[in-house]
Image (cartoon, rainbow, N blue to C red; front, side, top):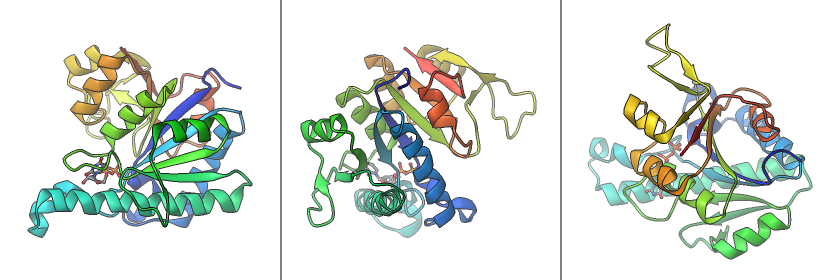
Length: 238
Ligand code: UDP
């Protein structure tokens, strides 16, 4: 057991894409599945909010000449594909029961998201993959990640980033002197103008006092280490 008994992980679709940056990559999926299972093995309840940017994002609507709401619906469907793919890989590597729950009804492939049912799955030790965001357009999966972590009363939200291992005072890809914060408050992050996730998500997390860890998705063992109490990446508190 670690310092947390229940965590929600935010995985962006890109994390499943590997170097191609698009679609899914078997090696990335296998690695992510092992990271999730390594947390689950500690006896920690784990739910994953999964993105879909490796297929389509609502903000690409203009380039395709389609409406934003339609584009967002397409983006949400991408998150369902990712969740089913991840469930497939998780169940191939473990005996654990893995449930996909979607915000919009897709009953023949997944369960509808019902808070109390998700809570029950988690209490029984099942891994829960949350797809479809909140089922509404005009947000990305950042907002649902915070919102689900709150409604499932998670001890922390673990935000897996691609290409960066925490929160920096300036862009580490542009500024070699950029410094990584080990911890900071939401207020400090907003004042410093550092962008961790969509502002609406960030504001909700601050208002509700959610604890958030930001770490590099490619760093092996990071998720487990965070749950065991190590200060990997950056921790953000209210
Ligand atoms: N999306 C949405 N409502 C939600 C969650 C997601 O409309 O509640 C759409 C939105 O268009 C978003 C896309 O799904 O761009 C894919 O999610 P996201 O961009 O968050 O994926 P990630 O960047 O995490 O891979």
